Length: 321
Image (cartoon, rainbow, N blue to C red):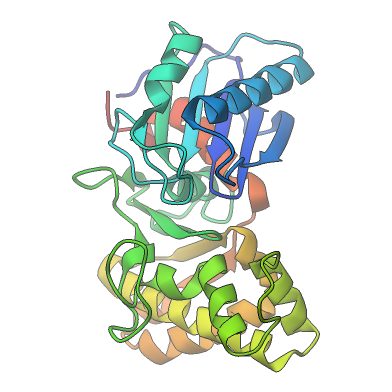
């Protein structure tokens, strides 16, 4: 589908993940005119409708902050799995939503406007290709390393959806067949090893801040920078798993750039150095050695910018109804 939004109008962009819900008004060039975020209510004290009302309140606030403009459409990145493109969502890390009709609800709220929903990691890939480190490159993998690990794939300058909208989901590439169980039911998936909560649990088993319930991957990365040996080992563990998975993806897809976003990506060299070492060890074919792995240039707004691009650049990034 190649329809274009009304010239000059902004897009209401939404990013829903297990850690945060973020909303932005995005202008046609990719500039964010208004933005806000909240922690995702995810402690069992909120049901599906309560979570929807929380999102509606955030939408109202951000629209008001932007001066209540007319919109060209609504673009959304949401954690999966989901039916696609209908976007009945069941995010693994948001138990309150199971088969929640997110796209249908937004269509009712924004009657007459195009509403397009894709996986949140796919929106990171789109954002980085459209306005970030992948701009001008044809073959890009975008990744999120946070509460979960996901990805999206742009090949030949166009988003690849796959049969069910899940192409590029690198989080469930197996990097260690004897590794820990994954929430998907498998074992040794990249997500099982490198996702923030899983990495924290592993570090606590090794003696890092044992018994604490209030620690996160960010705390773990901070302690790694301070030289805590277990925290350092955890970052190496995650980096190596990422490097192995990216080497496989690069051999399969002949990638030019891999952009990594999400909270754990902010660990910097503590994560990227072991990632590079593992990548260069396993990416042995000549073409695969050319791939560049870099932090997402758009930072924590990658997913929002990508969600907006589902509307602004639908000829490249939206292949459904």
